Amino acid sequence: MTITEFAGRTAFITGGASGIGLGIAKVLVERGARVVIADLRQDHIDKALAEFSGGGRSNAVSALQLDVTSRAAYAEVAARMLAEFGGIDILVNNAGVGLEGPILKATYADYDFGFGVNIGGVINGFVEFLPQMLAHGRGGHVVSTASLAAEVVMPAHLAIYAASKAAVCHYCEAVKGELGEQGIGVSILLPGPIKSNIHQAQQNRPEHLRSGSGFAESEAQLARRQVGDNWMEPEQVGHLVADGILANQTYIVTHGIFKDWQRARAQAVLDATPDVENAAVRGI
Ligand code: NAI
Ligand code: GGE
Image (cartoon, rainbow, N blue to C red; front, side, top):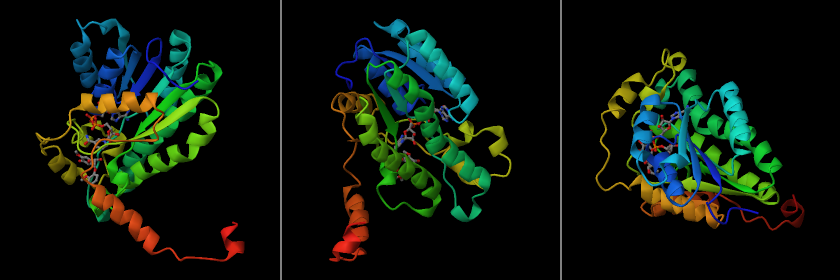
């Protein structure tokens, strides 16, 4: 029941008009899926659609404007997907913002922005799309983009980002068993550095969370940060994601460069854990 080929399947990709999401969109189209790109930014949508136009399967892709934090808008879009495609088969919860700033300057606006998009948007995707994915009976798959930032101890200026991504990771791990019984596969994408517009957090911040932000200065600096030449191409991530969907892989990891930090974090937790040999306690 889970996904064995992309032909005849419809994929819905949030944040699909730029970077990693666009890389995934290109590969899924190439491999035979119909793809619907959902993105906050109309400028990204226009540019992305232009990249598909004239291509072999350009009619397999369409796009719509959506802020994943808006539950009312998300519900309308999900209803449209049900009416137009008989429901989607693959959900890619990829929209995210790379906000950063000194934690002592963070305000509620910063917490609401970071958690609202990075974990709130993922939850809204599950809540809006799970019912139709279960009802159509074709089985399906949900990929959610977390980050290797969720797997290492991050510096304080990335605390909100890291915490929001760790939430994505643990939520997906926890629901995988129950959804698997219903024919819905679950994968978590854990990327290292990928060429994208991740440094444009400021441009993706809604007006009502701009005033009162303590991160204005750091986000202005962030906007000037350059993408590294050696960072991975989004389409390469797309191929890893497509293969990961077919294998119903729990973790799709793009880079091995943080492995020592990942190991150090896991080891520190184990080191702090007592060896309890009390059967009554173990039974809990
Ligand atoms: P990107 O900025 O190029 O693409 C993200 C897209 O999401 C943009 O087109 C943006 O308009 C859209 N978006 C932002 N807020 C949205 C909202 N509220 N509703 C709908 N769409 C929204 O950045 P990238 O890097 O491709 O980011 C994709 C995901 O990958 C994010 O979740 C990010 O945290 C994650 N990630 C990126 C890494 C990197 O090195 N680029 C590494 C690890 C994770
Ligand atoms: C490429 O730009 C970024 C960024 O500005 C913030 C976060 C991330 C990328 C990613 O989510 C990853 C980088 O691959 O975050 C990290 C994971 C592990 C160690 C350090 C990371 O970022 C500094």
